[in-house]
Length: 187
Image (cartoon, rainbow, N blue to C red; front, side, top):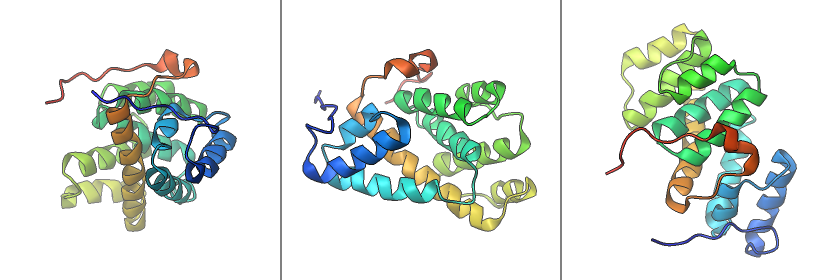
């Protein structure tokens, strides 16, 4: 099995350093998964561009964190589940809704449930949504353009989820309370 270093600002390739600095400013730390991404300036720069646009969308931060947490659980990606649990709670997502998502069920909040269901459907169905998937989302108060925004969030989180699953970065101390383990064996 390969070993992937968790780069710091000092050890990262020069082309990755501006992104690490940006993430340090945004989160107060360089997330370990970003430290592993930094080995590839192509990957980390693609990620930050999408990350910025996702967080400038019409979706609120609690809604974005709901999608990101749902994606991490659906992709059975442990580091992102812990990270996005912490961020969802920080952004005000009700702890019961966070726990529901972590257990693979829909949150009680109607809007968050619609977002979570759509995100899971996009991943499980590889983007081939049924008309009923779209209709449920619209009936929860969203519009068609926001379906496309959720696709952008799913794409951004795929970068983090896949990188985490491949590189297995250590979990930062501040996220250890939110550790999560996949319930199924990956084949």
